[in-house]
Length: 395
Image (cartoon, rainbow, N blue to C red):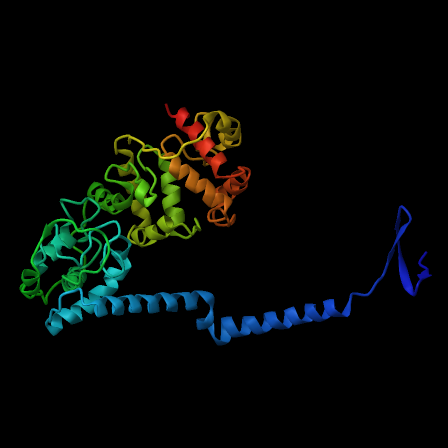
């Protein structure tokens, strides 16, 4: 039975002498509630309908473009580079080539050609010479001195190669700070007086004759080698894990997940892989993985220090998916761990714990399973202890 109590209705719920009253919500709460609804409608209309260029992502892209222009201006103001006058045809082709360079080359050579994992294209040092024909030849056929520089003749048209070579040709002698110099040093006068390019106006807009599947796989891996090593051994400097010795099914799944946006990650290395994977067709992934499987078992370089005794009980939660000996479990889609360096294991546990990986269960359900497991590890030292125990499993 409902009754009146202090002008409030008793709802009929009573426990231990405490009665529930039908109190009205405070006016300030109702006011804030309606304000949030009105704000949400206005926000949706403005940022997603009226002015989509004002979103955070659009503003970020605009800021990045502005920063790049400011960097170019600072370099030009410093006066450290050569002042070379190029024929208009070279400049026109270079402008077209710059777009292709931005799509496929910046991950290794930097946004201004200053070099990241691969050589600086703007200094006075060259591995293969600085004239246009040699630049075009390396782009076409790859570098015999650096397996990371793949042959682009099956990925780019002959015309695109000419344009990219023209753009790289115009970078000579700008001396933009970046990766340390490599190769033979040439005098500025030699670089400035290099012969002007002779372009083939009849260059085909279609790629050259396709390679065999084995050649294509080897060529595709050359792009991976820049970060993961010529033999898939990994590289602590670039935070790139070892690929050799890893389960083929897992490798194929991760390549596909990254390529198609299912593995959502804010890690710089993962982001750097995206332009590389854009070149890789889905039907070529299995061939690439098959090539990786032929690479010799790597000598793993460990850099972390932990306590295996403390790591053993912590690893118990990992064993279900990764195996009691770290051998992996294809059924549960858990990768092999004993072929991975300890620094990579620690970095990935941190990424899962901090929500940088495994945050979207709909896109990457396997990663979403890892996230709560990683959060059970109290701190980075616990992660190092687990990694130390895993090292012992591989012996």
